[in-house]
Amino acid sequence: MVAGKGSRGVLVTCGSIIEARRIANRVVRKRLAACVNIVLGPVQSIYRWKGKVQSAREVLMVIKTTAGRLAKLEKEVNKLHSYDVPEFVVVPIVAGAREYMRWLLQSVKK
Image (tube, rainbow, N blue to C red; front, side):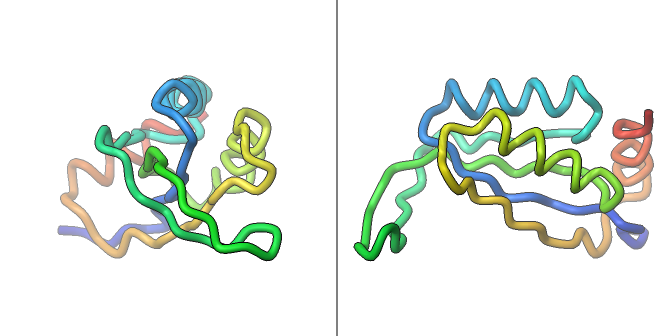
């Protein structure tokens, strides 16, 4: 185990698996993310939107990247996403397996 060294996980929900796959492929190809996990079973989201409590089934993505790529990643997600206000929640990766963390950093280098 080694420290995350600026590595981040980003949570993004989408309205469909097709949209999630399109976003995942684009951000990995552009080296904005090392990996995107798409949770195949829908998640149930309950949220407030335009003054009303809403409920929807969504597809959750967990995107692995670095702090230095976050701004460009967020811009790309917003460009590709169908929602007016897409979820983009960043969590630090505190630590991980040495080899995995090395791979993550190498995968997003330009």
